[in-house]
Structures are given as structure tokens and as C-alpha cells.
Length: 167
Image 1 (tube, helix red, strand yellow):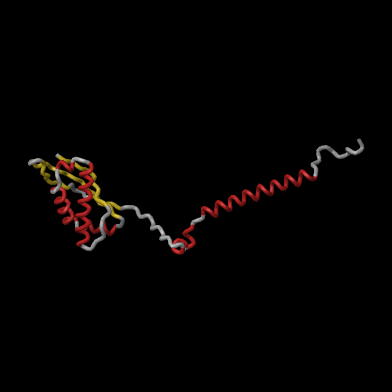
Image 2 (cartoon, helix red, strand yellow):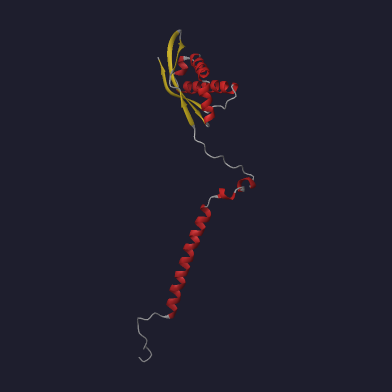
């Protein structure tokens, strides 16, 4: 009994070292985790020529599309089995840059005439299907880009049919 004179509440030296060692390891692990996460998430574009030194081309920056709408509808007759039918189309232009849209405003009378000619040359039965309307849109785009190319202007991306009525 004389050997057990130490108070029961005092921690032993070995337990204190173990607790201190666990706390240091946990703090070190959290620090390394944060540093690793920041390293992986850092922006690689700050380095400058990394993409060009690897031989991979740099990705172009995203450019949102810009739109211009024709206020007046394109109205013309379309031949259908020996009868004349009416077609009314509201059109919008989509481009990657403002210069192409400015060119469409400048050359609008010529573009309207070309679009009406394309619409008038279309077949009524073909225009009733979704594929026919998609083909019409592509034909209109080719006509508009042909006019813009003749005038030395940048091309459009798409011609969009906003409202389409056949009667």
C-alpha cells in the first residue's frame, strides 16, 4: 500500500505524449489536405504558355451569340398542286459577332428579296414537315451568307424561323 501514494487523477506521462502526437498529426493532415486542394484547383491559365508548350492549342474563349430580328414578316405565295398558297415567316439572324449583324442591317433590302425568293421557290408539301422547315432555314442561311460574302462582310451562324404560317 505504500507504493500507491500517487493521486489517481494525475495523467501519466505516456498518455500526454500520445495525445499531443495525435493532435499534431491531425493538424498536419488537415493542412496538407487544404494545400493539396488549393494546388489542384488553382487556375492553370496564370502560367501563360503552358498549353502552347505542351503542343495542345488553347481553347478559344466562349463568345455568346447575338441576334437580330426582322420586324416585318416575309410573305409570299407558294405553289401547291396547281394552287397558290400563302407563306408567312418571321425570321431572326444569329451571329458570333456584331459586325455580321450590322452588315445585315446595312444590306437588309437585298437580304429580304433573297429570302422571299427562297421562300417562294419552296414546295408547299415540303414546308409542312419539320425537315422541310429545317431545310428552308439552311437554304435561307446559304442565300444570306452568299449575299454577305459578295459584299465582303462576315457570315451569319444561323437563320432562325421565329413564326411560320402556311395557308
